[in-house]
Image (cartoon, rainbow, N blue to C red):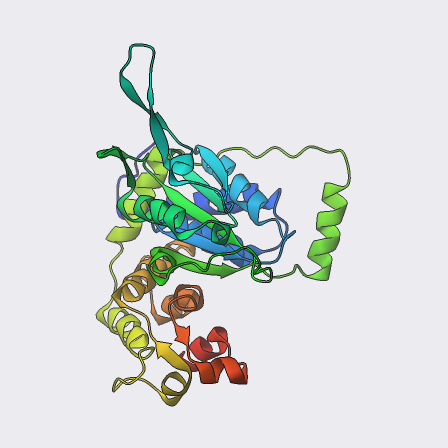
Length: 321
């Protein structure tokens, strides 16, 4: 890759690459602009994403297309009730020379699609949790480092609950974004049907390499953040915690547990990525607000009153914004 001479040049170059990246993804994924933006911002922020939506909305296709446009290795893991940790991370086998040898599992790729992640039991979810947090896995007492960059993009069906295992709060907290994938607009759905019912193949060209992604991840971290933006992000998270001085009435009335410090960190990093994607050299409060909902919606726990009255998490977060 050609390294820009300064961070100013790097920001300008990133904007051009980001537009090309969205254009390549747009060849296959029609509409869903906000979903694509959040997935890409999650990748450049070194974050994992949880995509929630009913079947048939191209969640799996989106992840596959993003992996191809980034030129990264990609593995899909179909989560089922009988999936074991060794099916994900790998296991040791006795080879022909009667020595134990570790055989890597599908987790050893740059992008992992954890399909229907809530269909596997907690023991297997815990194996994925280590990979997400430590970027490494442990087998037979040995630690094996995962490739860099490494992302988990998980999907979850919100309507079918039979045979599912709720994700632990600790694992939910490891996802930077909880992205709601909604039904497409009529015009978008018409374009999807037209594009997918013919015989015209669509090829996606890689726009970035792994080294370039790592460089731009470092660029996101180097972007300066004004003190007022930092204070706004931390104050916003503090307002989600019931029983505290900062909590408004909507939080005290409808929330059992608020967001932790990781949410504040993700708000600032997400705001940086959002500013960079829009060609700006520093984030402002509007950038924090743009990423607040997908960062906070899976970190707040509603109480019984909120569930009984049908008060959604999105309504609560919108209320404190």
